Image 1 (cartoon, helix red, strand yellow):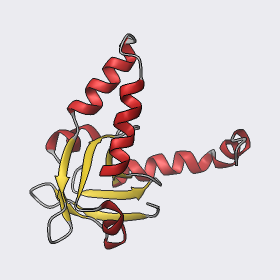
Image 2: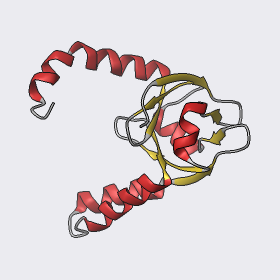
Image 3: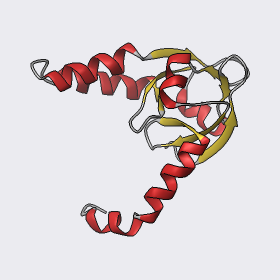
Image 4: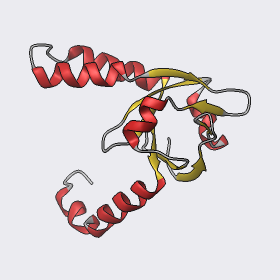
Length: 141
């Protein structure tokens, strides 16, 4: 399970080191694409394949479905994890997430998210302010 958060820096080429804790679960490559809430999502190959199957099952007669699928897939790229445990974060994804050099990598159970650290801190503070109310609305927990 991918959980926890880690602060990292992107190097001048847009690469970042993945924590050793995550590398075993990720395998030798990941799929990087846009995430929800202006972050970058990193999917292990098996999870990406599951997501593709779900996307394939959605109706292509709905404009929102077509647009979501097009953008998600057009911005996706497979990234090999190098011998130093690094991956390249494509410029188009860094621009989308507003990531400078300071990033926070968070585990989101079945995938990872990369956030600009300042944006993550702001988002996390907003969520924490409403955390009790959110818990009240979640019937399944």
